[in-house]
Image (tube, rainbow, N blue to C red):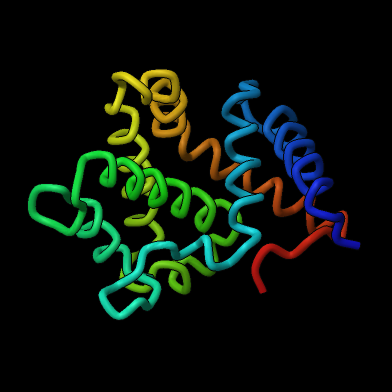
Length: 173
C-alpha cells in the first residue's frame, strides 16, 4: 500500500537513513534528508524533466540539459539559472544511476551510465562553488554530494532493494 504524501516523507526519510547508516559510511542527516527529498520530488515524473525546449517538450538529452545550464555560451540567462539547472542535473543523475542503473539510457537519451555519473559529480561540484550570499549555507552539502556521489548511488541501490522488499511504492513504472 502506498502511503499518503505526508507519510511519504517519513517513509523515504526513514528508509534512506536506515540504508545509508547500515550500508555506507555516510552518517550525515542533512545529506540523507536531501537524498530523501530527491526521492519525494521525483515521485512526480514531470519533475524528472522540468527543462523544456522552445516547443515546450521535456528535455531528455543530457547534452541539451548541459547546454541549457551554460550562462555564457548556452541558454541559461543568469548564473542563478546555471546553478538551478546544474542542481537538477546532479539530482537527476544521482536518482537515475542510484535507483535505476539498468535504465539510465531511458532517462538520459544521449548519455552512458558513466557519462551520467561524471556529469552528476561535476554538476554538484559546480553548485558547491556557489558559496556566497544566499547559497553559502548549502554549498557544503553539494560539495559532500560531489565527493560522495558513488557512495550515495550505492546507498540508493540499497533503498531500492528495501522498497522492493517492503513491496513499497514504485517511483517510476
